[in-house]
Image 1: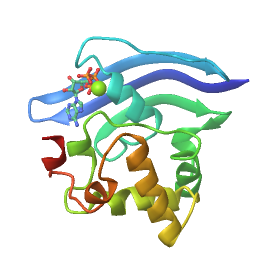
Image 2: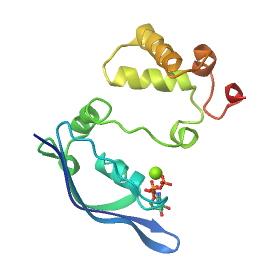
Image 3: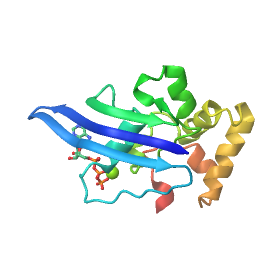
Image 4: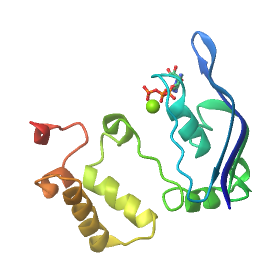
Length: 157
Ligand SMILES: Nc1ncnc2c1ncn2[C@@H]1O[C@H](COP(=O)(O)OP(=O)(O)OP(=O)(O)O)[C@@H](O)[C@H]1O
Ligand SMILES: [Mg+2]
């Protein structure tokens, strides 16, 4: 079954130097159980493509083309449909945590919120899961990470 069909996807940022076309005319198809790796030099547009496929650039860029996920056009989805798709069916792991987390909200709260939004668990149970996930990825003191703000990196020392 076809999972993702992208046709003619282009993203243009409006910059002080004028319009900047980050990606242009991307076509790709992913079937169920496929693995697709996109490789290219830094700045070639891999992250922009990923963000555009999840419709995360609407507010900051002109996006053209079509992204169809399981037969549904992502750019015609309602907000509810988008939230249903993101996090549960389609996930994005951002490459720069310091730029991707909200700097003024503690890490634990941000992870707990995701778990709750995904409907996996709520309240104290969601917090427990967040701690478990932090432990699972190798932090020796998950509670310290949970209680920290994203800009603090004392645990890396
Ligand atoms: N918000 C933005 N405004 C203006 N230009 C942007 C914006 N976001 C990305 N770009 C530009 O779009 C181009 C593609 O960036 P992108 O982050 O997709 O590259 P990448 O292939 O993911 O690189 P890397 O391998 O370093 O992660 C770059 O030239 C980048 O500067
Ligand atoms: Mg990138």
